[in-house]
Image 1 (cartoon, rainbow, N blue to C red):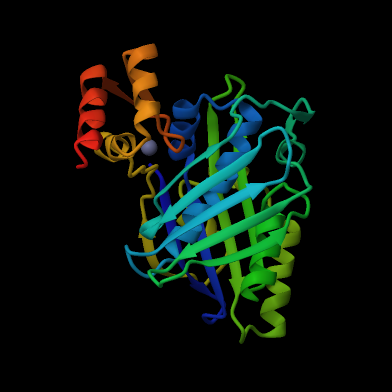
Image 2 (cartoon, rainbow, N blue to C red):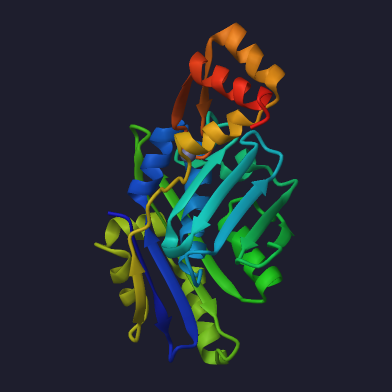
Length: 292
Ligand SMILES: [Zn+2]
């Protein structure tokens, strides 16, 4: 099961988030027909998105991550919701690039000539947008840089997706450790030491029974403040797409009626398909012509 633990350690001087979202990334792979490198890139972004979602204070808040490095994957988009639920897609799911037979080349697939944008909708009039340049495009380092530059929070961000020989998702998750403004020199050195020596998070998720066990192995005084079971959640529905179709220009609707006798809409975020009949499209036309 997908699982996230969040809490503090080292006398409450560091915040910790650790999640196992293997099933969630498998669902994303199945929904979008993601090839291995696309699975790794979207999976890492979903993992950090789960952490960002778990930081939100209310169900009215939402964050969207947009990564565009001008590489073969195109844009990666992940929406993060309260409690750690997420949804996301990559423009081109069929990307499989390797550095070596054991190592996927996420950096090259994402591309390094671009930015990470984080759009925070915190229920205010305007969303809060921040943007940083991509560094390595391996994404863990890039989000550490984002937290440093945009939120002035020094962070260790470990993101990992391990793909099995049959191309399914073997493990996927994140470990994020953030320093509070009051963190002592001694505790900063402890975190630096962890960051320099820790095994990949995808490996740790296989070695330990749960994210909680990983964190307990790192810190003697871990205090859990919350936990969640993040899900791949999309808020799309047939009704919502129907509303969009109903307001398309009449000429577009007539073209769909004449050429296809109906239409199929595919949600970008979850690849769910919705069919609309010729009769429904004709009703949308009639409503518009009647001025409704
Ligand atoms: Zn959807």
